[in-house]
Image (tube, rainbow, N blue to C red; front, side, top):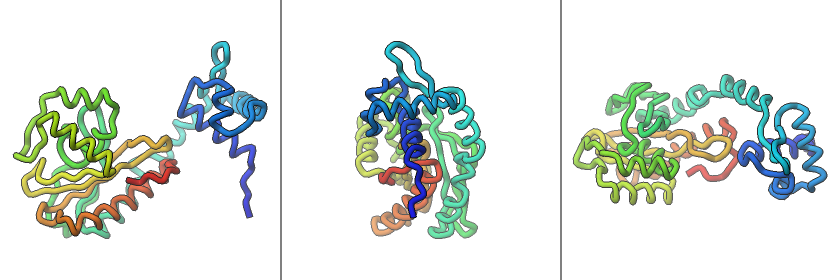
Length: 256
């Protein structure tokens, strides 16, 4: 039995639409939501009375209001990334027997916000929580850079890129080509770019809007990152990344 309340579903859809595309007028919101103008106006007026949206300008444009900010703050406290990733991260490590972590972008660096290491992992990865490194090195860094804005990518390509091993990508053209490949295939691989004997693979974590907000990555010995093992690593990473993204509100089908 379907217990969905159509009006609530439609209102929620409009609220998410205003959140994703602030500044749209009534006609645009009605078209994008699939509702009539009259229906959209009534729903938006109800949301406005609850201080979830507000109208500004002439003709009127819709934006989120202060009650939506309160909801967002409450959600951030209740469903934060670090808490959400804990169980999937542990499951990934138990299945693969390797070290796994979650990294986010902070400027032109990546920051480790969560990690879990298998007790019998063949290699000890030195990326503790809070560890930073440049975006251009490692699977997680390259993945986060690939999905960053054009301005961030250009800033990184113009920066002086430090080399850690002979495999570190320090040539801007080579790095740009690698970023394009990552976007096409939906994952990143690093082979001895940061540490000579270490390899890693990373997949994106998406939020409610579909934006890539973090990278789920697994590290192992370079000798173990073979072409026949890579599909299994990717399958498990994508499975757990999909679980994390879903917990953050992502409802899309792109779990690459």
